[in-house]
Amino acid sequence: MQIGEAAERVGLSIRTIRHYEEAGLIVPSARSDGGFRLYTDPDLDRLRVVKRMKPLGFTLDEMRDLLHILDELTAGTGDRGALIQRLAGYHEAAETRVQALRDQLAHAEGFAQQMREHLDQHSR
Image 1 (cartoon, rainbow, N blue to C red):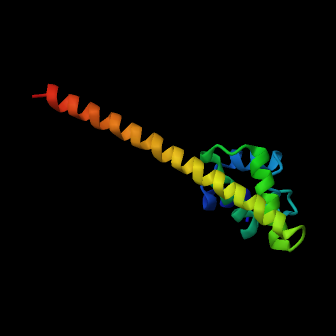
Image 2 (cartoon, rainbow, N blue to C red; image 1 turned 30 degrees about the vertical axis):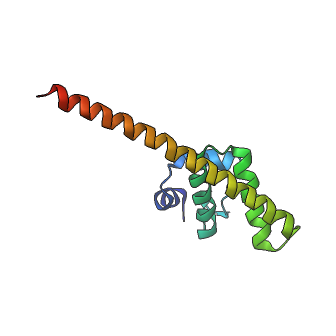
Image 3 (cartoon, helix red, strand yellow; image 1 turned 90 degrees about the horizontal axis):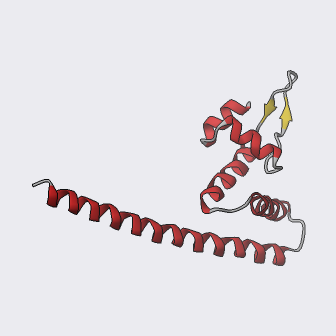
């Protein structure tokens, strides 16, 4: 599929996909005769991984590293034990960052509730 369809399916902009391509996170599987980027379902899976890492604050280097780990595990190359250990590190980091976001959301919800109470109190 071409980049526009890939962007629509994954929920990213064409500009973002091009940025990820320039950063070495995704490489189109092929190009059409007209030079258009062509993406496959595995390419979309890679984009989905990156899309999920972004809001957790992972860097481009970390994204690249995790994709490399996943590639190695899928291909069955490399030191499986070491790869699993590195993957576990990313899992732990993701869990920690998710909890931090939950904490931040709880604080924001508390603030919104406080403002609602003030509004209700002063609107009478």
